Image (cartoon, rainbow, N blue to C red; front, top):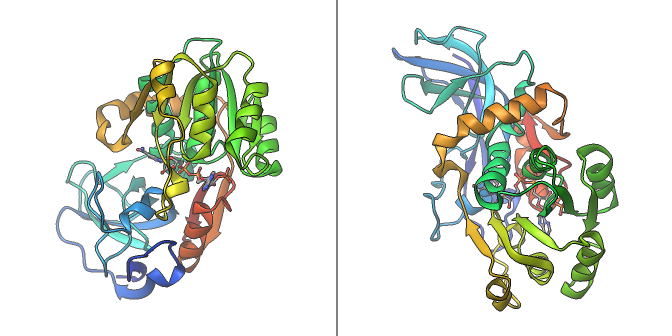
Length: 338
Ligand code: NDP
């Protein structure tokens, strides 16, 4: 059995997470038992939720245990199988964690899924046709539920969730305005991803400036907002929201290192008669097949072909993860493991 490089959570951050909170080790892969499958990981997904799991505080999910392999989505191929449904070479997606190989009880529901790579690249099953894509689909269709012609805004617009969101929203005939960090990302948003406009939050670092920029970019007001960041972006959207606007509260990454994110004027939620709803995509598994069908069709049709940021080798995972939390990724952040 192969030697397996792994990254463990070594200590919990107080404030900003650092590479020193992780530890790289090497261990032997255990021999397979009946019903198990050995998976060689090709890509590891790095996602913002992992930062929350590093804390031992109140959350919707259990925290990442210290001294254990960091949790994370992976795609790869079956390298050895003692389960009749899996053959060597099958492409699979699972939650293999920050390591090069994993041994999976393939019979347990939800642990491993075979995927079709004939029209969708393997890595997309961690992004556009994976958890981030479904996240965009859920917030758009189940909370914002837009009518054609309505104006939608999304923060972290060029990332894994944002790039799927714009494809789904444009397919529904909406005007879509992104908020992203820096001119290069804003250019990518409008020239490649299909946004009607994109605002650089670094150029609008305060409420007044961002609210003014949104007023120009959204002359008909805002009907739906997909929130990934929090802070003054949410305040500015509330100022420009139309009556009965909907906010899908997906993430608040500006506060993941513990920064407070006060809401400047919550009375606007009442004044605008708004619906503001948080959600966790893994609590809606029954809708995933429907979402994945639509996302897969968009990819196959060439309407959803987002860029990816790919770090090389497991050892690069901590820095790539920390960089992604601060906007250094350009599209879905992955680590290539072979
Ligand atoms: P991204 O690929 O978008 O990467 C994170 C991005 O967040 C960065 O690239 C950066 O983009 C942006 N960002 C970070 N800090 C700030 C800040 N202070 N101000 C403004 N922007 C910031 O990540 P994902 O697409 O994977 O995730 C997007 C959001 O969705 C996250 O908040 C995540 O937690 C959430 N999420 C929630 C789920 C749920 O079930 N509720 C499931 C999956 C994701 P930029 O350079 O443009 O500023």
